[in-house]
Each structure stands twice: as C-alpha cells, then as structure tokens.
Amino acid sequence: MARYVGSACKLCRREGQKLFLKGAKCTSPKCPIENRNFPPGQHGRGRFLKKSEYGIQLREKQKMRRIYGLLEAQFRNYYEKANRQSGITGENLLKFLERRLDNVVYRLGFAPSRKAARQLVRHRHFLVNGKRVDIPSYQVKPGDEIKVCEKSKKLEMIHQSLRRMRDGRLLPWLDLNKPQLTGTLLEIPARADIPVEVNESLIVELYSK
Image (cartoon, rainbow, N blue to C red):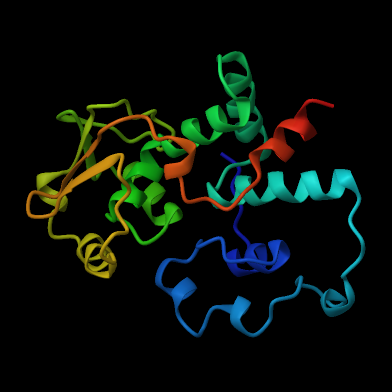
C-alpha cells in the first residue's frame, strides 16, 4: 500500500506548527519548528503569500490528514462515513479518527507517535478483547479492552513511551492500567475532549463544494 516516506518534520514546517509526528523529538530542542518555522524548500523563507479561502480550507484538511497519517483516499472515505451519520459532520469525522486502533494505542501511551503505534499494531503486538488485531484502522468501540500481548510486554519502546507520559496526558475517555499494560475505551469522545488543533468545519466546507 502507498505511504508517505519523506521527512515528517517537513510536514510540520509546511503547516507552521507541531503535528507531533516524531514522538520525543517534537518536545525537544531538536524540533525544526523551534528554529526553522517556515515552509521547507529553497524559497521557504519568502513563501508567506496571502491565502485564499480555498487555500485556508486545504491547509486545514492537509493538517488533519497528516496528524493521523492518512492518505487522501483514506481520509475522504472517513469524511463520507461521517457525512452519512447524523450529527455534526466535522465532529463525526474526528471521532472516527480518534477511535482508530493505532490512535488509541498512541493515546494510551503505548507508542511515542501514531506512526510507531501503527507499526506495533501491524506487527501484532496488541489484543482487542483477547483477540489479536493487526489492522491499524480497526474502529475501537466503547468497552473494548486493548492489551499488550504477553510476548510483547518486554518491548522497550512501549515502556519508554509509558515513562515519558506526563501526568494528566491520559484523556478522560480512556482508562489505563500500567502494571497490566491494558487500556479501555470508556466512551466515544466528545469534541471538547479531543486535543487536536484543527478547525474541522473548514474541512467540511472544502469537501462540500
């Protein structure tokens, strides 16, 4: 399957803010946003043009797509599903993305980034309700228990990531049992409880044209 293999830091610089794609590096002085907060490329420093309405909507869509590590076709499919559901389309979209298994693994602190969480899931390191699941896009439902496989409990990446978790980082719609290396989705998150700095209404406007 196609995937982005370029520099993750260039994506953050293109959006002009940290998208937290590189785990610990994003919170260290080595983060390029700290000293090169301008678009990448030869003419990046001078590329501060006035954006059109379409350009603003496009950047917001690209930002959200890159945060969750999705290709355009995948992201568009999530939008179509969100649009078919009752309620606010933009919020529905975010709820679908947050309930992806790779995102839940990242939010629980088992991985330093969504990219790392996706790799761990694909390598079959997690059980969902006692069954091995290796599909990163698997939609976690309220009450589902995510558990690190017995043979994977010694993985240093998981323990390092849990140690880096700051107090209060765990979201109210998740429950974590660190000693047992298990986590549970308590409920479908509300928009106010999803810490993603995007204006989802602009994305709905873009796709509605």
